[in-house]
Structure formats: structure tokens, C-alpha cells
Length: 252
Length: 254
Ligand SMILES: Nc1ncnc2c1ncn2[C@@H]1O[C@H](COP(=O)(O)OP(=O)(O)O)[C@@H](O)[C@H]1O
Ligand SMILES: [Mg+2]
Image 1 (spheres, each protein chain N blue to C red):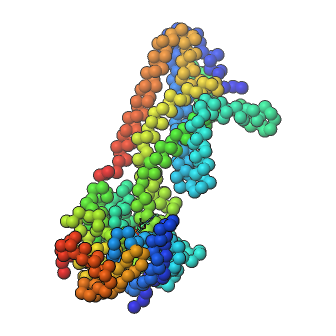
Image 2: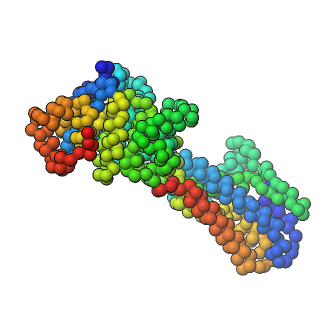
Image 3: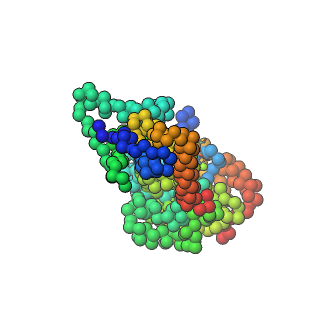
């Protein structure tokens, strides 16, 4: 299989972390992909589960509750490993022939293949999204639950359907209110992207380890890695803060 | 005079608690009915039963002859024809005053934005809030919020508007402006059922007053009847208590 591991072999033996800057940047790009896709997927799924849990009636709310509890009660790493392994196992057992050996890439400045998407990366994105959805759902549900029942009665009184009340009254207010709590999840998720190592993704931590293997500069490399995450997460927090203040309802 | 709303033998309980025990009355076009009675007697429950926010256990509610309790009736469309004004205003806090009023015509009646805005302007003018349309609920006083609440109901062009103690959550100095608006729209011919203890308002515009106690209508009559010769002892006591409470003063001067 052609995958992210190939880059490892193509990397020239050099000393000094600076000479691996391209590789590190490439790997950070993968980290960014994992983060944003995981967060967005988690948002879409989380919103769905939050609505199901809060307004879905008996069956749907049970399903949502079950999902949230199972995900929150099991380690992220096993979720990612399972997402990765199930299709592989299906192929191995001959049940189906799922296409897992594809990849997207670009050619970097030194004419090397830089993989941007393959099955391990996709599986990690899905795993992160599936996991994050459970936490995001809980934060959003908290926001939805805080909308007063009086507003819902008012919505019914002007003839809104249940779905219209959710769409036009609860979501706009509930999502705004869940931003502060939701920000926790958005700021934690970058750190969790490193689990992708376990399915062989060459993200920033994996690349850092590779660089250390070549340069033996472990302390320096890990410090740089910490700084990269710190800057990244600080930037996310800043964006969220601005979003929160921009979406504030005047007078509230 | 044609009947707008017909309430027939409505019963409602919450668990063991029997709240409404057979309430019957009707409201004709352009009529104002004032409902009053002790706290906990079932006034709010009655209003919620009328627009099916809380469907009655038994009985019948007809809007212009059409039952709201029949199977297959489009309840949301029927509710759109029954306005409601709440004690706690219940404005949509993420929407400007204008949009609190346009959202119904736009989303429920399916009007174009411009039409909805035109309609909202008319309703907002009626409650004298034209200068405040760009304010959010939290930026408005209680009295202003309630007037927008009234405009929100009026903009739907309802057959009847239900008021549930619209001034009892207000500071005393803000009650007058809301009552004035209610007087204006009553005189403009709005069909209204008003739960209130503002006897000045009742005296000014009520075609009929209904005294409700313990889930039944105990006595009905004109304001004149109630203020001169109420028959029932409980009514007399209640009116006396109101007078003691408010010192005979009324927020509406006629
Ligand atoms: N949703 C509800 N669940 C249970 N009890 C209720 C509910 N709504 C009202 N009640 C009870 O019904 C009685 C009448 O209430 P309500 O209609 O609000 O009276 P009023 O508006 O005349 O003060 C009260 O005893 C109240 O506690
Ligand atoms: Mg009440």
C-alpha cells in the first residue's frame, strides 16, 4: 500500500531540525486536516444527536443517549482503531472488497510525494468526528435546554410547528449559548489528533518522532512541538472568543 | 353578531388535580370578555385549553364553527388564528422587535419578507413602538416588551386574541401604557379574551365579565352588574379584596 509511511523512507539523513521544515509543515497540514474535518463532522453529528436527544421523542432520544454514553464511556483510541480496522477486516474476511488502497497527494518542492488523504487519515478523521460528536452534542443540548419554555409556547401560539420552533427559535439561541462550553471541545480536539499515529498517519507528532530518530534532538523537537500546539490552540481560542462576542444578543 | 369562539363544557386535569370542571362560554365578533378570579382558579389553563397548547380532556372548542379537537384538524394553522399575549411577554430574545413581529407572518403564513415587514409596521404602529423596532427584547422595558408581544399577536391578523394577565408582571408605572394599547385595539374592534384584575380596563371595554373560581364560571355579567350588584358571595369578597389591594385606584382613567 502506498501511504503516508513512504515519506519516511524518502527523507534524506540530515542534521538540524530546520532542514526538516518541509516535512514538519506537511505533517502539520495533516494535523490541521484531522482537526478541522473531525470538528466539522463532530459538529454535524453532534447537532443531530443533540436535537434527537432533546426533541426526538422516545426512540430517537434513547438512540442519541445511547450513542453519547457509549462514546463517552470508551477511549478515543479504541474508536479510531475500530473505524480503521473494521473495513480492513471486512476485506480480509472476503465479505466485501472495500477500496482502501487509494491516496491523494501533492508533489512537494523536492519532488517528493506528500500524502494528504488515504484510508488511515480518513479513518482517523471519522474516529475523531464520531468521538467529538458525543461531547459536542452534550454541550449543545445544554444550550438548547436553557431556552425558556415560554418562548416555545409563544412560538406555538403563532402557529409554528415543532420543527419551526426548533429551527427558528431554539437553534439560533441554543447554539449561541453553547459556544462557551463548546469552545472547550474545539480547544481540546487538536491535542487528540495525535491518536492518528496508531493507525500510521504521518501527522505532526509522528513526524516529530521521525525527525528525532534522524537528529537525536528529542528535547528540542518536543519543545517545538509543544510550541506549535500552543500557538495553534491559542489561535483557536482567540477565534472562538471573537465569534462569541460577535454573536452576542444585544442587551442579554 | 357572529360567534368567533365557542367554548363548550371544557374539562382539564393535571394528574389528580381537576383544574377545569366544565367551562362554557362564547365570544362574538369584536367582543371583549374579561375573565377574573382567584389565583389558581384555572384562568391560564383555560386560555391554554382554548388554543390547544394544553388540549382539554373533554369538551369542545370551536373557532368560527370549526372544531379544534376533531381528529385531522390542522392545529398549527388553527393556532395561527388565535393570538396569545403572555404574562411574561415571552419575546424571542435573539430577534429584534421588528423580527419578533415578522417571524409569524413570514414563517407561518408564508408571506414575502416585504409583505411581512409592512404588516409588522402596521401592528407595531398600533402598539406605538415604531421607534423601537431595531431593539432587542433585553433592551426594552417590560411595558415595551409586552407591547411588542401584542404586536406579534396582531400581525397574524387573528380571529381572537387571548391575554393572560398581560400587566401583572409589570412595574406599576408601566401598566398604563400597556392597558392603553389594549383599550385602543379593543376599540378598533379586536375580539379579545382578557384575563386581568385591572377593573378599570374591564369597566371601560368589557362586554361581559366572567368570574371563575375553582375551575368553574361562577358568575357572568356586565361590568356594571359586577360593580353594582354582584350576586355571589365569593365574587363580592374577591372584588372587595382587589379594592383593598389597589385602594380603589385604577390604572386606566376614563
Ligand atoms: N402544567 C401543569 N401541571 C400541573 N399542574 C398545573 C399545570 N398548570 C397549572 N396547574 C395547576 O392548575 C391550577 C390552576 O392553574 P392556573 O390555570 O395557572 O391558574 P390561574 O391562572 O387562575 O392562576 C393550579 O393549581 C396549578 O398549580
Ligand atoms: Mg395564571
